[in-house]
Image (cartoon, rainbow, N blue to C red; front, side, top):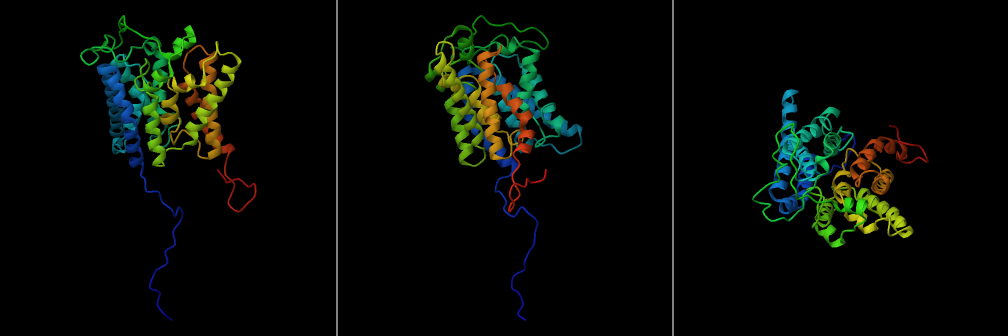
Length: 341
C-alpha cells in the first residue's frame, strides 16, 4: 500500500477566514473619518480642533486607565477608542466647554463601552451614549452653535470653550441656528448646496455630507461596512418625508433637505453601522435602518427637538437583539427550521 504524500487535516469551522482583523477594520474606519475631521477643523478653526482633541484624548485615556485598573492589558491599540473619540467629538457643538467634552468622553467609554464588557459587548453606540448624557445634563450648552468659516477662527476661540469646570459658560454674542432649527422654528430652508458642502452651522462633523459619503463609500468598497443599513435609512427618510412634502410643501421639509441636514449622514454611515449594535441578518438590517429613518423624521417633524438621529439610533440599538431573534436564518438543508440561538 502506497504511503500518502499529504496528511489530511480535520478542523472545526469556520473554514473560510477573513483577512481583516479587528484592529485593521478599526484603523480603516479612522482613515474614513479623517476627511470629515479635517474639514471640521478647517470650518470651525481652533474651536473645532480643541473639541476633537479633547474628545479623543478623554476617550483613549479613559480606556487605558480602565484597563490598568482592572489589571488587563491596554486595548487602546485596537483603535476602537480612537473611533469613539472621533465620532463623539464630531457630534458635539464646536463651542462646547472643554470640561464638558472631557466628561462626556469618560462617560462614552466607561458607561457606553466598559460597563457592558468592552469591545464587542456594548449594546449602544458609545459615542451616542456620551452625547445623550450631555444633552440631558447641559441642554443649553448642547444647543448653542457657532457659525463656521468666520474670520479669526484660527487665532481665537469662543469664550465658552475655556470655561472653568462646573461654571456656567459665557456665550459669545455671535451664535447661529442650525438648518434644522431654522426650518422647524422659522420655516426657513437652507440651500442644498450649502448642506452638501458644509457651509452651515452645526456639530463639528455633521456639516459636510459629501465627505461623509466619501468615507462611507471607502468602507463599503473595502467590505468593512454593511451598505444595507445606510441605504434603508436614506430610503425610509426619503419616502416618509417625501410623502409629507407632497401633502403640504409649506409645512414639511423636502426629502433632500431631510437627507442632507443635521446628523443623519454621519449617524447613518458611521454610527448606525456599528457591527455590535446593528443586526446580523440582512432582513434585520433593512428593518433596523427603516426604523431609524422613520423615528428620525417623526422626531424632526412632530417632536420638541429639531433633531432626532441620536435617539433614533439608540432606539435601533435597543431593538437589535429582538431583530436578530425575529429574523434568524433557517438551518441549511431544512425548510422553515430556524437556527438555534
